[in-house]
Length: 128
Image (cartoon, rainbow, N blue to C red; front, side):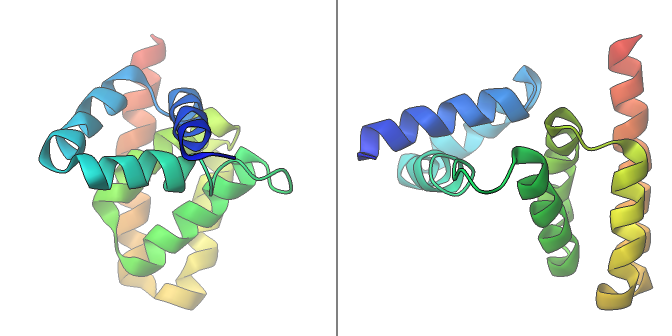
């Protein structure tokens, strides 16, 4: 796939995963560094998220797990709604976080669970 095709695919995937308010929030990255934005859209979502062997749901499982292990909670906040939009349920996300306890320890898992509760509450409010 050429660079333009990857970028367009990345935009498509991002629109599928992220609600409009999240996409608007992400615009600050584009403003701060157009080069980084191109990498995020073209490579991050246009390349990493578009392979045919893994579903978006599976990719979000990997992403959530990786973000928890890194303690990248700002990014975790961005990806939890995307995980829900990809087909993960709240219970599956909770189980994923509990599973991470054995690999990351309680502090990161507890913080992730608290964040999940916030995101789930926000998501529930959006559907009311």
